[in-house]
Image (cartoon, rainbow, N blue to C red):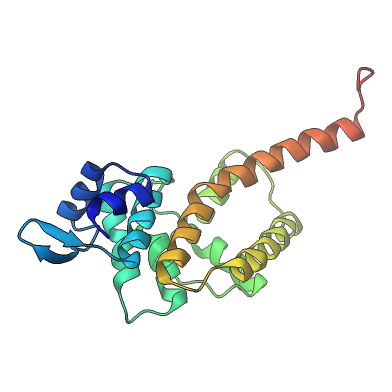
Length: 205
């Protein structure tokens, strides 16, 4: 297909496609003339992935390039690819390096095999530190309850993970991480409100 059709099918301006080509996010097409090239369905899939990263997930070009590097590494397994994507995503909880020992101890109790440099391990450790600093008690049974719920969701998410192509796998992981996690948080808050009203009903309810 010509670049105009590629842009039309992806729903982006031709100028955006040319920009991604210049930045190396989209591989060049097959030259058919000095100033013309032909693009394939693989280019379309890649372009849609780039749009998901840059547009929907709002990653920078540098962050997108890092994610795509994980996609393009043929030596990695699916697990390594997903791990690489998580490591390439922007760190939304930057700060001093926390003590990872308590977080690792919980993961060990739950039997979760997680890389020692997994970004979420640092997020978890920072969250535990913040709770402790606020004087909020987090007994094991409380964290265990959250862990059971998270594990059930994770099993379902992984079962739904598309495996037809690496690009689709990565797109699912990125969208699920950056766009579905806010949905999960909002649902928890809404569920809390509903549960509270059932336990403490008001006259107008």
